Image (tube, rainbow, N blue to C red; front, side):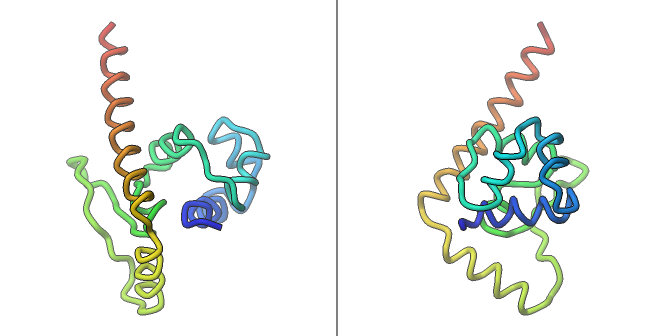
Length: 126
């Protein structure tokens, strides 16, 4: 199971009471997709972008385990969670597992999110 699969599983538990049906309905996808994403199937980039936007989370959380919260000004800042050494150790281990490929994917997804936002603004102007 990859880091992103672990994060999707955590979100399913925390945000949707471990209910694949609720999660699938929220995301506009099938329960089978949610089941697969929670176990071992890498989600498509469209799903990741939608997940980040709808749950107002960030890519760093999904790929590195770091939580970022958006400030009122829309700027993200690092939140280190609690000072529990176990929590910090887990985040450190996950960061070490992050490959260069994952870093490239994070950057591409961020760029995709910017482009989607720009397209939405242009569409609204029409």
